[in-house]
Length: 155
Length: 155
DNA sequence: ATACTTGCAAATGATTTGCCAGTGT
DNA sequence: ACACTGGCAAATCATTTGCAAGTAT
Image (cartoon, rainbow over all chains, first blue to last red):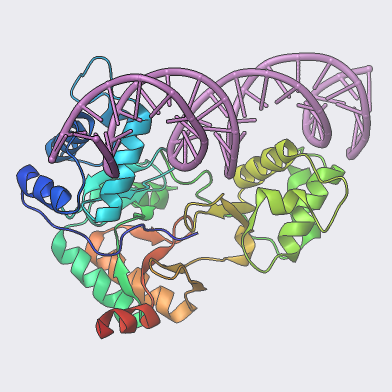
């Protein structure tokens, strides 16, 4: 029951660079694979396999099987990873975008990103308290957001 | 896509106390419900619905439907909660046991508990860095365990 | 030309829902 | 008695697997 497929992210700056890396591994650039990458590069937040299949309003949508197979391969290569922010489907992002460190409120469900500074402070605390080298790539931190804390204090 | 059902844990010291709380809410103590509680009180680690259904070698096993329905109800009351340590099924514990703060290694899959002191330090860092009141009840912290860090450094 | 890829169908694993018979209080 | 519960069947949601036909290189 491991949490991650690839430990080593493959950081690329552009779609073209990603394609070069894939070709270098003997992988082909089909239209389906291309669309998956397009959507991931266009997204400004983690997206589900369903959203990727719908592409950018593509009709008919990509087959979900192809989406999952491509995502799996892209994760193996290290270009992509996925997070679980709650009980919904897994959400995929480019490893290069370095979308790391989400906060989810247990009460109102708010999702927000941790800024880099806060992320670094927290990682430091975890490292020194546990000996683990923390990664916030697969699960969010959860708890009560400031607003919900205030509300709870009113009771 | 919230992560938790009940924000307020209901902490009890014994099975009897749990039963009193349930009765106080007009809920009945059926044999199935009783077995679910027995297993949870006996377990020294989070257990899956399947494991609960098998009870302590009970034959025939409890119907999974009943297990899930009981767990749902127990979570609503605040007696129980569940964690997701990876991609497997949800794992259930008594809220009273306060099993909070798991560490999972992304590389070797090791699962361990955070000691209270480390947990407190980390919570403090998160609180001050993010404004969130952290809870480690639903997802573990992940990263590389000391052994896997050392191994990675050898490369 | 040939191996990598796709799409469709079907399987799988976890969990939920409908429904009616059973039982705790 | 009567409402709360359990068990069985079937549905649902996310994801995976098998396989034959399609296509990038």
